[in-house]
Length: 357
Ligand SMILES: Cc1cc2nc3c(=O)[nH]c(=O)nc-3n(C[C@H](O)[C@H](O)[C@H](O)COP(=O)(O)OP(=O)(O)OC[C@H]3O[C@@H](n4cnc5c(N)ncnc54)[C@H](O)[C@@H]3O)c2cc1C
Image 1 (tube, protein in one colour):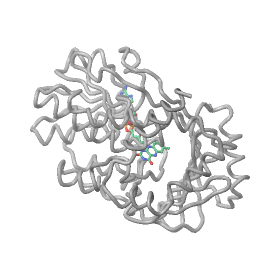
Image 2 (cartoon, helix red, strand yellow):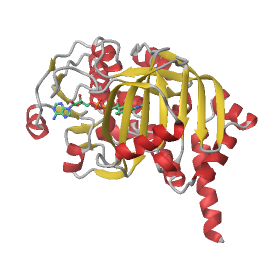
Image 3 (cartoon, rainbow, N blue to C red):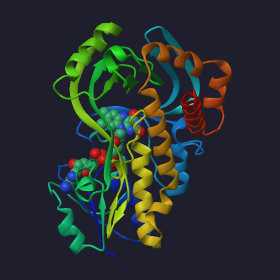
């Protein structure tokens, strides 16, 4: 069986790894000269996002033989709104390095596979679809998915981020919700180590021309005094994709709509969708069937994002108080309940009650 993969990002490499576990060595095409996202940043994997899986890094190791070495466990999250602040502690997830460094997730995945990566090679999916039995679109963008008519935009945001130098707790994440500078988006700080961290602002509906203004307002409001080691900006685009396969072409990762619109988590969606695409072509099972859980997560995330989009700062203040109230906190972080699903159902119910008034 001949499989071509367009993109040596997280989803493409995870797909290659699963194919190889079943004896198929794919060809991987990468337009850049190395794997990994262009910017180096510290991403978070939150345990609450993929229930009922208890520990995603452990799940990947045990069930898929994907061994990833995170930078650190995540043990503390502090959430800040203009008038409130709350902290949760526990085994909350992991901090993971993204980018092109040797210890980045993409390079860790690359070290697990044998498949050849053809660098500096921008692949044409129509040509590959003729030459290969299957083509995996792992391109990280919506371009090809849109061309094939399978993409609907959900949320478009502009992201500005930096590596900042200062003094940090390596296992602690900070988050900010404030419409003054993030509109309906969010900001966060994830440490690489004690001395450097990623500071990132995500603003829905912003673009390259105005993201700098939001960024300045963010720094002024939060009175940061960090030294900036690098600064970058890029687009984040979440979409609803259907179907996920057209003829012999399958969409995975961001190209498959697995960048969730609530808080931009996409790493695990990229890995699992890559693995499921491989399993579906190896086992001859409908790809959509494998995707049920991921699609359910996307639906929940879209519902919660739509709800949060109505929020003003005073609502965010109340949300923090709620999320860090002892009973709720315990339920969210110290049980294995799929709390996002329950919150989404509650939100749906509240909307229904409102519409009856
Ligand atoms: C700033 C930022 C912060 C993030 N934070 C988090 C986080 O905290 N938690 C989380 O879970 N996720 C986070 N994410 C999301 C996550 O890192 C990525 O979205 C996810 O890993 C995407 O993987 P992918 O394989 O779909 O795409 P990518 O990793 O973008 O890979 C796509 C690859 O395809 C190549 N390519 C494209 N077109 C072609 C072509 N025609 N021919 C050849 N090669 C091609 C590209 O060069 C690229 O290497 C973040 C993303 C960003 C940008």
